[in-house]
Image (cartoon, one colour):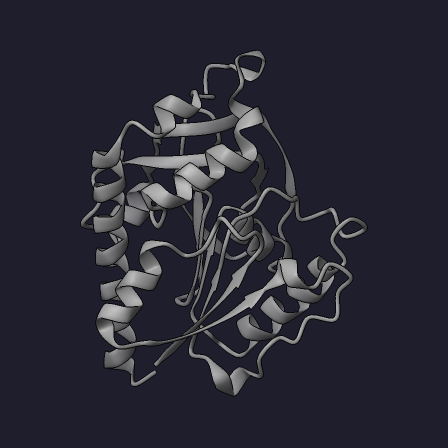
Length: 243
C-alpha cells in the first residue's frame, strides 16, 4: 500500500502520519507544490498511490492568482475522489476537499490558533473510526478560514470558535480543520515562519502565544496517539474490504 501526500510549504509535512506509514511498511510518495510556483505540477497517475493526504498551509483556497497550482491541485483531488481513493485533508487540505465536493470556504468569525477542544457530534462518536476519542479532545488549531459541510457529507465536530471542524464524505473522504498529525518540530516551524499571527497585537480569545503553542508536548503525544488509532482503524477497514 502507498500513501501520496500534497505538501504546500516546507515546514508543514505530514508529521506523525509519516511515522505511522513507515512503521506499517507503507510506501510514501509526495508532491511538493511550493516547488512549482508557476503551476505545471507533475501529479502522479492514479495507479501510483492508494491513499491521498492533503496538508495544511498559510495560503487560502481562493488565492489562485497568487498560487496558480491551486487550480491544478483541486482538479487532481477531484480525480482522486472520483476514483474512490481514501483521502485525508488537514486544515487547508480540508478546505480544498470542501471546495471540490461542492461546499464553500469563507473567513471564520474568529482566528483560531492554539490548543483548544473540539466537540464531536453524536454521529461521529457512534462510528468505529472515531468512537475511541473523548467527547471533547484538545487539538492543535491554526486557521482563519472555515468550511461549510458539503452536500451529502456528515458533520463530525465543531468548536466554540468554529462551527465546522470536521466532516466525512461517503466512507473514504475525511476532512479535519484541526491537526492531530503535528509534531513538536512542525509546531516550531509554524511559530518560526508564521509567528506574526500570534504577536500581542493579534491576540484574541482564540489566539495563543508562540510560547503557549510550544509548551504542551503532552498534547502532541496524545494527538499523535489518536491519529495512530484513526489510521490503524482506517487501514483495517480497507483490509477487510480488500481495497
